[in-house]
Length: 425
Image (cartoon, rainbow, N blue to C red; front, side, top):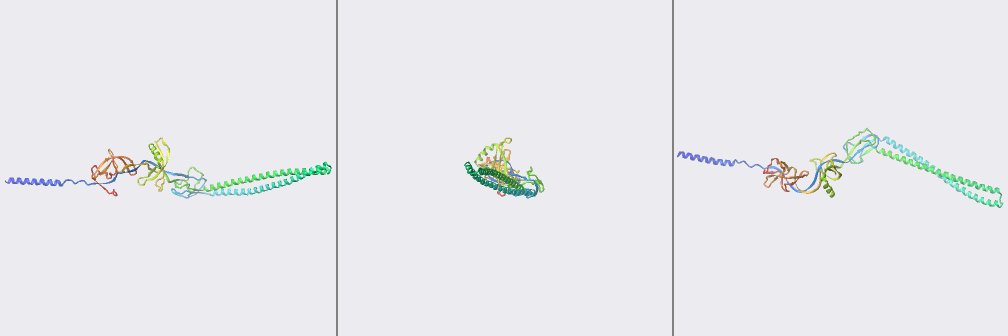
C-alpha cells in the first residue's frame, strides 16, 4: 500500500509538472515584430510633359568688346569690374585737350573762310554793277549810233542833190563810224564785265565749298572729341578691366578695354539627338516649345522657350543645335555655366511616383507597394523618362497605389509598415 501511494503521488507530481510546462511554453512564445516606419506617397496618374533632357551651356544674349576710337591717355575709369551698367553709362574718359585744340583750330578756319567769302561776295556785287554800267553805256551808244546812221543817210541824199557840202557829209559819216566803234567797244566791255562776274561767282562758289569742307572738319573734330568719353552701348554686366587709368591707347586696338555681356535676357544652347528632329519640327510648328534649365537641384528651374534651331545636323555628333531664351530676371543663369535642360515637346497621361520610390534590384527596378493590410510587396516596374523630381512608371503600377519613398532598407516582402506623417517623412 505504501509503495502504491508513493507511485501515485509521483505520477500526480509529473502530471502537474507537465501542465505547468505546457502553460509556461505558451506564455514564452515570442511577440510579433513592430511595424517599420516608412515614408509613402501615392502613385498619381496625370498629364506629364513629354521631354527631351540634355545638358546645355549658358551664353550671353549679346557680348560687346568696348574699344577706344581715338588715341590718347585714359584719365578716369567710371565703373568697377563686374558692375551692372545701363546703356549710355559713362565708362572711360580719355584726355580731351589735344582734340579740343584741334576743334578750335577747325572753327577758326571756318571763321576765316567766311570772312573771305564776304569779301568775294562784295567783289562779285561790284562786278555785277560793272556789267549793268557797261550794258547801259552800250544801250546809250547804240541809240546814238542809230541817230548817226539816220543823219548819214539824210546827208548822203543831200550831197547827191548838192544841197550840202561834202565836207559836212564826211563829218556826219565820220561821226557815225565813231559811234559804231564805240558800240563795239561797249559790247567788248560788257563781255569783259560779264566774264569778270562769272569769275567772281566761281570764286564765291569755291569759297563756299571751302567753308563746307571746314565745317565738315569741325564736325569731325567734334566727333573725335565726343569719342574721348566712352559709354556703354547696351545694358549688361562688365567683365575684367583690361586697361587701367593712365595707360595710353591707340585707336581701335585689337584688345578691348572691357567686355560687356548682356545677361537679361540670356541664351541656353544645347544639342539633342537627331531622332527627335521630326518631333521638334512638328511641335514647334504647332506653337512655342518650352524649355526648363536647372543650374542645380537646390534652385528652381528657369523657364524659357526655343528661339533658334540650327539649319543643319552636326554630322560628327548626329545632333541638332537649339537655343532657348530666358528672361533671367533673378540672374540664376550665368554665361559659361552648364545646366540640365528639359525640352518639353507635348504632354501625355502617365503614372508618376517620386524618384526616390524606385529602387534598383538584381532583376531590375522595383518599388515597395503598401497593401491594404499595411504590409508591403516588392513589385517590379518599368521606368520611363524622368521629370524634375519624379519618374514615369510605364508598367507595373497603377494610379492611386501607395509606394514607399523612405525607409526601404529595412523592408522585405510582407513586412508590416507604419506610414510616417508627411512632414516627418
